[in-house]
Image 1 (cartoon, rainbow, N blue to C red):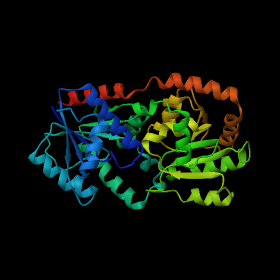
Image 2: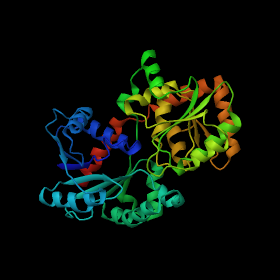
Image 3: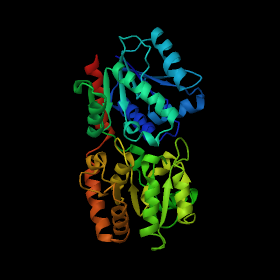
Image 4: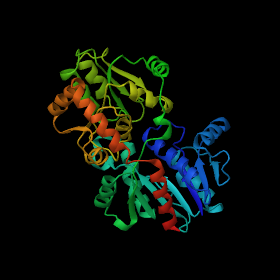
Length: 378
């Protein structure tokens, strides 16, 4: 088989979806030396492409090659440049996420990964221009796809119910934690990361995008009401102030006069993420909506005590091992955040449970399921 995979997000600092595609490709390379993989990107810088090859472990893998296609923007790439290439150089299966290329030969089977459908549940949190394109292209893309892949049972069921998709057409995988994330960090390395991001001695960590659906203003309020000035614990919101940034974050920090207590170090380099978690006192992930929630699993893997919203994907991932709060009840978040920050016995108990539960997830297992999906599409 010739299997094309859209890897445009690799190297783009896109957090969750970059992690997913990077690890799927990396573990397919470890798993499969038979099928031929063509990895499509819009990056043309040879130095960056060489770094991507090395990171994926495909430098000496003859069945893996990277094809770089230039385009004016992502729509031009999806609607003109990539289809033109595939008409001349067809693959058997093309793997992408969300929006599929619509003008490729029907004989090319398309699989698309859908990380979540938050734009259907919380459209008020999405820029109108983004919402317009999602509402237009997602239904078309799901109809064109031969296989739709959710990143959790919850996401699979959401897609089936909202878009009325035939259950036979949709499957799910589980995300996992990357191999590099599991490396041990020395005290010197931990302190170097602390210095790099100007992290305080003791802090509550959130890491991810800073979008409205992440419910971060409520976390800031909970911190202000329940934690501020207790043992000098700070709140660190790690993530870039990029696409769809929630302006209420800055407003809430100002409202509670927390500019010295709530820190925004920006995007965290992938190589530093494990150290950031190791340094954290508690990890909090208060989202209104997720498809999976990789940071929750990352914290669990390292035994960092987790407080997360009680939404279905967090319940699916944690399976009773983490502390969950009622996302509709701000007081519940305040109470449990204070409890987790101060109760050492609770923290130890959660840490042990989380590490055991996290062992149920691996990229190797996910890559095997993806490869099986491809073979069933032939």
